[in-house]
Length: 295
Ligand code: PAF
Image 1 (tube, rainbow, N blue to C red):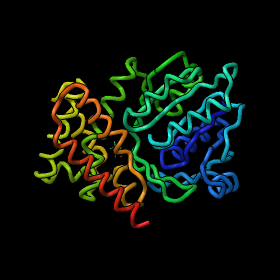
Image 2 (cartoon, rainbow, N blue to C red):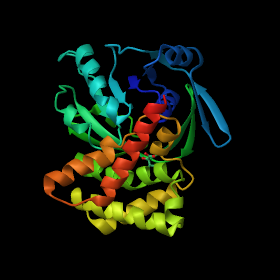
Image 3 (cartoon, protein in one colour):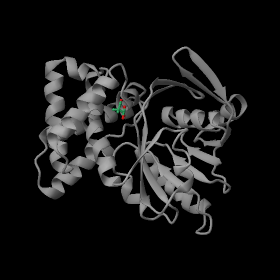
């Protein structure tokens, strides 16, 4: 299968390595020329425990028309721009399947404009980008996928190589992951702690619970079930640096708009009071502003 992966961050590199190891022809699409050049020359270096392997990939800064599947692995705030290049590259006759694997739910509103079959997914692997071409697989997890529109036989065929769990209800799939990110991501980024420390520090644990209470109300999810799931993820990824902490530490823009920002908008629409969510949203936005001013 010819597979294009847009975005060569931790998750894009992880998907690229896994799919190349299963014999697929992979093209990584990056923003920077130098990253594309290095990936094309050296491949993706994948490390898990003591095992280190290199997988060959093609790489480019632009989309090629010849592909069966496009996996969009960019941050939520870059989806809009990616969709515009997808619409320019693929005409209505060319219908590669599309898979979007972002945190949050803000990107969903842009998916309606696409004529191709679209699926959305949530990634439950732990992965850390070591440099432009290397990824460390820190936790074996699964990729949960649900169809948003149309049928996607190419994605179905990747069930084993990507350990995909297929789900019927895309809204529920994304909302259940969103609630995890609403709690873990801002708190770990603000307090500069690993995911596991949210369980061991009683004050942080209390704050996590309040955030989950608020977002489960807003997203119409059952609180106890969500709260148990969040604690489970903290346990499974105890040693992980959350993606938002990684972004803040690297001085990058975070996904706070797509995560807590989405909950805030929904809360205001539904008339639900969410003071803890408002606080973490403003605190992370404030950090982003501070980073911008220092650049
Ligand atoms: O964004 C992240 O870091 C991850 O989605 C999660 C599940 C919170 C684990 O770190």
